[in-house]
Length: 465
Image (tube, rainbow, N blue to C red; front, top):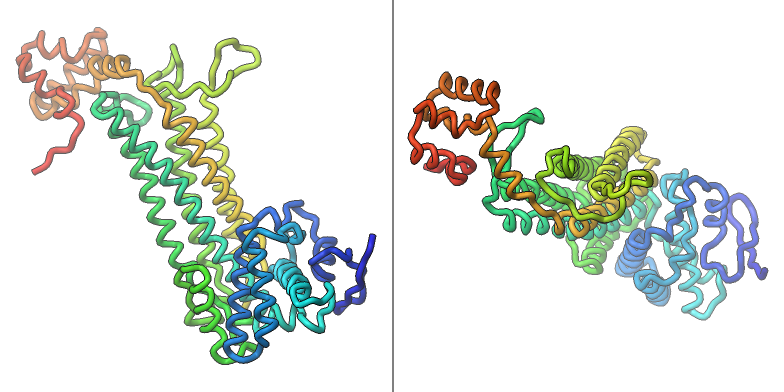
């Protein structure tokens, strides 16, 4: 294999001649074989780094520290990354020591070597375009990495919000389809009072809507960046005006309101925005899992369970019991949600463990947030398309449960009083008779009044002044 030789602080190494990465990437590749999940599996992150490096080159040229020819070559190399080219050259493991230095250097080396080619030079001829002196000019890993992470997370959030909208709309459509169809509401797993299936699915849609709003609010915090902070927030080696120029360039490149943090020392060490976002993911996972649990319970049966809903049949459910079909989609939703809840704990630990002026654990935060957001995006779409859209209601069974249910007596409280209602409920329990028939037989209400009270519109909708 043809090679070229590069050197760093620790000595010389042979690099594959056709590789765009360099010696520091090679050392990181050898040092960190933890997850076997490589940077190139997260193209959004690579594109985010490309925008950061392009914005830095533009800003450095504006403040007079980077020649136009080198700036243009760096920007062109970044454009290729933005077009999803050369991503296979990002070979470093997502888990790495060094607070993301290996990721930053992987980007610096790939961009430098491609820029060299664009200028007519050979890879490794760093006297013309250097990974540190030019691509990383006025930067540190400690501002470039978190800024790229902010950009990537915002893109991930946009994708997640789109999938959440699909799920929200599925719940909303099902709410309209089920409309005023009666079913029993339950508390403590016991019969409570009647409601409509439309109300139940509307409540699911509202849950998703609320989580979408929370994620949108957290996105606003991602637009605050620390480019220009360099190592710890003091801006050492960053020219005057660079930080503001870099933020302006990023805003122009992305069309999003990126701006420089007011306190760069705080912004460089504080990872609370990741904790907030992770908390949003946990909330979403909690609600999704609760909804999945509700649907699994209410579709139980088909003969010996609640059997209120029929979920789409996706696959045979047993290797031994012929004819059995399981609620596999809600089950996989549960499992994904459990995993996201665990991710939240990992992010919190990593954020808390950051010491002094830098949090060195941002790589595990990045990996976990990317993984969690991706998983929730997939599960929202799967839940919608393979379960919610195809749910059917066992309407007659649900209505019969309502009309024969002792819980119906609650609606009679305001009309015959608590004592009489309790008496009716007790007789119904002891005899197996219906509340409706007992009220009529004991002359507590006439039929017209009773029919008015238990009409769906009078039982299931809050009264308005």
